Length: 308
Image (tube, rainbow, N blue to C red; front, side, top):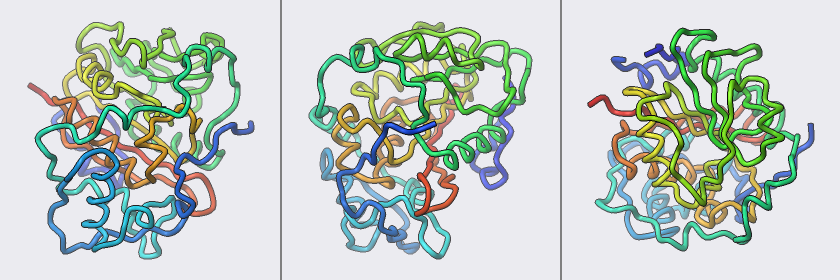
C-alpha cells in the first residue's frame, strides 16, 4: 500500500497507519455568491434532523446561529479566513438512517444519460485557477508517480483528469460515459465506459485500488449509496476516495438535492454518502478554492476505507 503524501495543512487529517466551459452555477439560489456565515465555535456538535433539503436548512440554522442555509452557503471564504466547508463536518452526529428522500435524487432532465453524453465535449468544466488548485492538491496527496503496485480509479472521467503533469502509475483506470473522451486521456492506462446511474456495480475485484478520484461529477449520481458501497469494496484497506466539486454543473442533470443547495450543503451531502455507505472513516472537507469570490470555488471531501 503506497503512502499518500499529505498536504501540509492536512497532515493531521490524512495521517493514518497506513478551453471554454459549458457549465453553469448549480445552485438556484441567487445569493449563492454571498460570503458565508461561519459556524459558531461554541457549538460542539451538529445534528442532522428531518429529511431531504429540510435537513440541510436545519443543520445550517444550528451551525450559523439561526441563519438559514440560503445565506449560509457560498463560494467565497469569509474574511477571517475560516472556511465553513472545512468546519462543517467537525463532530457531526448522524441520524440512524439516510436522511434524504428518493425524490431528492430526481433531475430536471430524466432522459437517457447515454444520449446526453454521446457527443464528446473536449472542454474543461472549471476555470483554469480551480484546475491548477486541484492539480496542486493532487500533487501533494496522490502516491508519488511510478510507485510500484499503485492502482488508481478516476471515476466519471473524461479527456483530462487534472493529475500533475507527467503523472504515471502502472494502473490508472478511467471510468466515464464517452469513449472518445476517455481515449484522449493520456494519463489513463485503461478505461471503462459505464453509466453508473443505470448500473452502479463497479467491474473490479475487491481491494483493487489505492485511490479513487472523482472531479465535479458526484452531483450527477442518482444512486450514490450504491456507488459509494462499491467504492468501499474495490478500495484497498486504508485506500482513499477523493471527491472534488465546485459550484459548476450541467444543472439539468445534477440531482435536485444538489441544485437546490449551496457549497457548504454539498460538503454535507457528499459526507453523508460516505457515512451511510458504511466502512469509511469519518469524512473530512477541504476548501482549496484559489481566489474565493473571484474564480470558481473548489472543494474536496475525502475519506479512507476502514481497516478491518
